[in-house]
Amino acid sequence: MHGLRVELGDRSYPVLVGREILGDPTAWSSLMTAPQVLVVTNEVVSPLWLEPALAGLGDRQVATLTLPDGERYKTLETLSVVFDTLAEHGFHRDAAILALGGGVVGDLAGFAAACWQRGVDVFQAPTTLLAQVDASVGGKTAVNHPAGKNLIGAFHQPRAVVADVATLATLPDREFRAGLGEVIKYGLGLDAQLFDWLESRLELLVDRDPQVLERAVFWCCSLKAEVVAGDEREAGRRALLNLGHTFGHAIEAATEFSEWLHGEAVGAGLVMACRLAAADGAMSGEDADRVEAMVRAAGLPVAPPPVGSARLRSLMGMDKKVSGGRLRLVVPDGIGSCRVRDDVPGRLLDAVLAEADRDG
Ligand code: NAD
Ligand code: GLY
Image 1 (cartoon, rainbow, N blue to C red):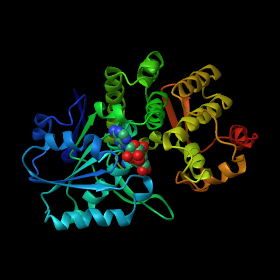
Image 2: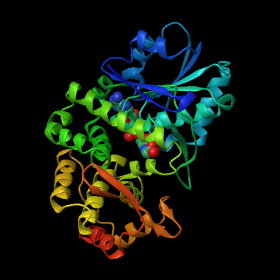
Image 3: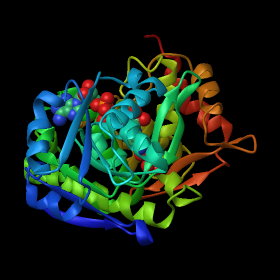
């Protein structure tokens, strides 16, 4: 087991990454003092991983809430069900919520914890690769609104994150590969050493070799912890974590958030960001090729779907990262480094988006 800390003063917290740690009472006893715990999970994760989680919690008042599965349930209505359950069990200010599941459960349970009694502790036990390397760390919590994703939310840092890579053994292949999109993002955007390491171990990673997986998750969490510690509210550097996401978000929106998984769209978005950087001279064509080869080897798409460049461009213009009328994009400066830019020539962007004009 490896541990790191997200340094945020009196809200600092540990992130534990290991194998078969979810059901380890010694791990939990040192992290959680709450006498009452509501475990929030979903109908897919519950039969697989609830039992070890409960074993880890030991002797306290524990209640469980099993939600329906899926992004479409990340809503205010489902949030109400969490509050109803907390009320029904008489959970007070010193209660805690344990989020057991992927990013949907983590975001929703985290937001419930931010609101209940004006804020109770939340513990994140992420069970998808995406949630282990991204969603569970950093305190962003939210539910969706019909007007858009994650529109209602709060920053509410967890008290601890317990990322047990053993839980990834049951993850469907497509979900696992989607998580690799975020893993590649960390290497490309923040750490050339990680990128090199991933290049030499990608096959093992795709095969879910437990040791490689544990190291990859720990490495990504360390990078995220450092970014969040320096910029909790995304006033600056935290925006770098959106590398590939402006393209990715447009792809997800153009396909009605139903055809592409988030990590798949991020995979194609990373390649598009590299193509843009190469056209602008910020990155070499060889490095852009390396990124494309890695995204492909991870089993992720490397180009946008044929939805038309005009549609993608307009969806990118509607993206949250627009500031003062100029499109702000995170663009690599090479492998291992990136920055937010609002000066990318429109004709270069158009050339990259033109891939979406090909026939289906
Ligand atoms: P998800 O939570 O929907 O999980 C994907 C699927 O895998 C679901 O069907 C889930 O039930 C299933 N699953 C989870 N763990 C499993 C396991 N161990 N074995 C088998 N099946 C398992 O999706 P996700 O990709 O984990 O998260 C996406 C969500 O995370 C989105 O709502 C997104 O907005 C959010 N997100 C939040 C942040 C953040 O910083 N808070 C960052 C990135 C993404
Ligand atoms: N997922 C991006 C962030 O946490 O800031």
